[in-house]
Image 1 (cartoon, rainbow, N blue to C red):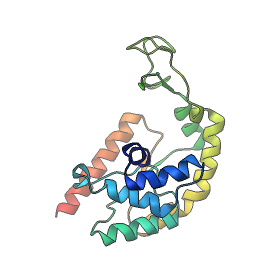
Image 2: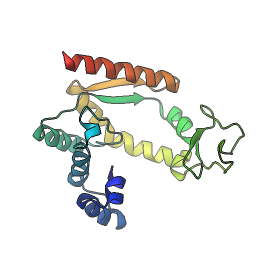
Image 3: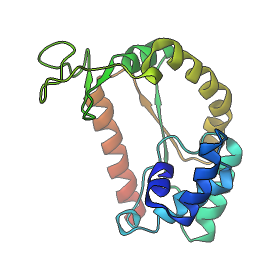
Length: 187
């Protein structure tokens, strides 16, 4: 959402751009404003899914408050749990083509190793998909997110999923949970 706001040249995007270009973290209140602006779009009127935000309890509290001010609330928070080694294995297997197509060496390999099925371009491993980078990100994630898990668990919003299952199984469990939540909220 942040990149889209910057690319679209919205006032919030322009403000965020100054932080990004300076290599600084975008302040929480600005990120929340970008999210709230995006949630006003028609396609978010019936619900939305945030990925990667909030990351800290102060961000969660600010998001809750901002949503409440607009008459909205979170229905659930989804946590896909897996041991760090499994996360490293799965993320480090991702490969991308120059055109943006995504493959996985184990779960969705190309027909010919290292080559895009559609245009024949080489498949590359992004820097942020390298094992050492993933492990550093996991350290930060655990430090910042453990309190966030407790925050949402205490509010009865947390739904946990076994990330060690096959991707399609995880997907199916999440869809079933979201369907159940939707039905419960309609009653």
